[in-house]
Length: 278
Image 1: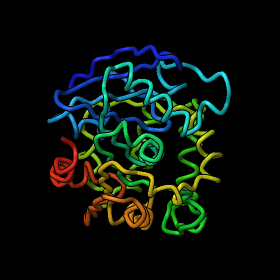
Image 2: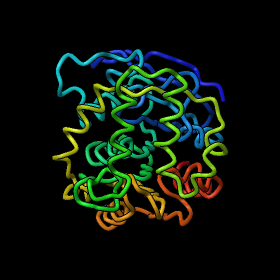
Image 3: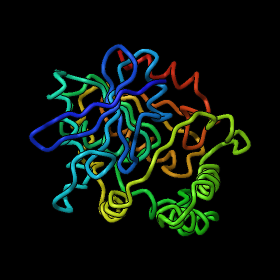
Image 4: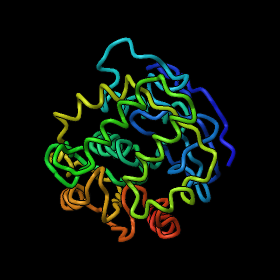
């Protein structure tokens, strides 16, 4: 799939975006991923029927830099995204977010539901999820926590060769698959993403105080919540919690998925999003 790079100039700065597909617009981003012309696996699942706008947030790729630390916060990402929507000329668009991208989506729905046709939240949470659940691999009580933390530290170091980085990324990703033996099948595409250390470091601090569960009733747009039954990053309990608190939502649980239902049960995922994104 070909992704076309564009730049959007807003009052809040210039942002790098990548566009693919045709149809109604769907905005997709992630809190600390750096995208390029090779695209993104999550975003690819929407391109069959939609025009996808894949956004590099502040301090990722060639987007605007942060002049103040607070500009790396989740709410600032939401404010930037809505300015991009306006500059692109959309009265409304849908937003889809996976993992920390979904946390951005939660805040987007709380503060700008009127800007959204629909909201898709995949494998995510409306509050801090690492300390409160031993089922989360980032929790110190999880049996694979120590190795996961080691892998993240190594990947952030900036000293790895490409081969070393690929090997460690594979090991890290396999922790989040229902069937790790299918890694090569799921990740056979030529997508090359980077990780913004600045944004990741800020997110790790912000996460410790993140809790917007009491504001979820402010989300008025149609919302689809998806989670793998065995998600080790954002355990299923947080998706169930959001479903209980967001009005007008549908919860779909993927019984043979971990953190990547859009790859692990791809056709079911595509069918699920068709019911809400039009």
